[in-house]
Image 1: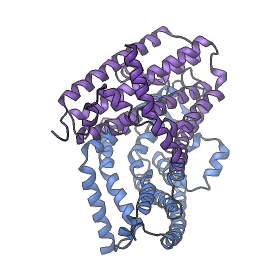
Image 2: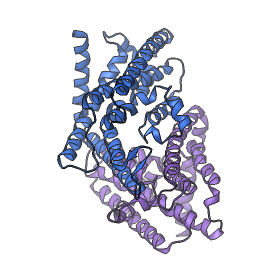
Image 3: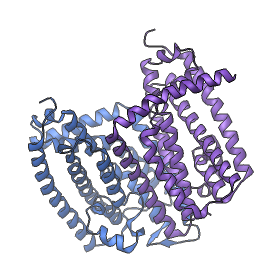
Image 4: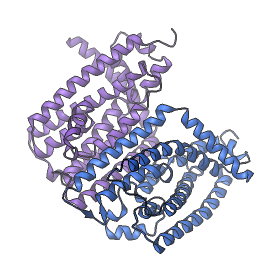
Length: 265
Length: 266
């Protein structure tokens, strides 16, 4: 219990730090809302004269992006990889390694803290839209399963990106590779467009990759595109991917610790 | 007048010599930077392709037209930031910390002096090649005529001027507002959306907002429109008007800010 509570404290500290930069905080939210406004313009224009494309109605599409905005603060976070790389290259990682924390989970707790304030504001906006009965926002098909799936997606996304960040143990320049991976993982996770819009053969490949389980499947559960046993089966696959990445991550981190030479050490 | 221009041009050439040599020293950074920007552009391109393939077109814009729009937007963004990296990266910090003294003491225009410091065009040349390659691949949609080509280049230049003016205005806000650097975050959000889509998608009420008042929607749209659909005097007039207003606006706001500026040593 004590072990978990110290990570909660890190999350709390991150929330306080985030709140100390109101312009950054509101700037990021406003930027997200502006992007959403253009997404709204785009899809309302594209759906003129159409009722459904690839199983998505206009209402489903707008809801898809609104909920992406909401849970993306958790499921699409990508900053860890750069932070790991920066800490390893600067030698600051040594300070974390000697503390009674697991560095990896410190990063996770910290990122959750940074994500909570914007999430709460966006949640307020979404609830307000429900309140005024905004015609393009559909209610969740299964709120409980959607929330659980989003939590699993957040953990999986963290494990994928943080494992990629450990490449910094062995290479001096990581920016390009990490940027490539994090951006592709966000796209293959369905952040730009629902994956059902991709050609069939690409969708078939994506089923065997972990990325769609970070974000896309949660939205499919929200919209009711997955039902009953499909929902539980998909969440089972999410758990399986988490398990696989826990093992990979542990292995690579252990190798990395051995290869690590602190700059100040 | 001619003597003054020669003075400013030779000053500018001297300014960019050192960054060019420096760029060649850090080749790993160039590779990393290129990877990052190629990744971003490739993903946006996939998005455009997927959407256009599903719907046939976005407004009157088919896939090649959309690629031209996207490539033009990326070129304007990358080229402007590369040439005026100091304005893009440092204005807010320099104003807040009182670091403008160095520029105020020189017998040369302060905004010119400040804007021309830092130059990363050489580092970004590989990234700038990507939009050019895209234009080549989408060439079937281009109207090939010397007049249209010149019009396109003029329009690109005007868009870069507008974008530069916007970042000067946003940076200048730091003369009055502390912690204003996140306005650029909002601008970037706007850019990521507005530069991707043609004005056809805007409802009527949004057209004057995104083409004139916050003219981000105009920057990639106008030159691409000329290249794909030919000359349109209304669009051209709007772009000329916005370029003039924003250029003068940027100089005016910067000069007002400089009068209010308190140096670190004062």
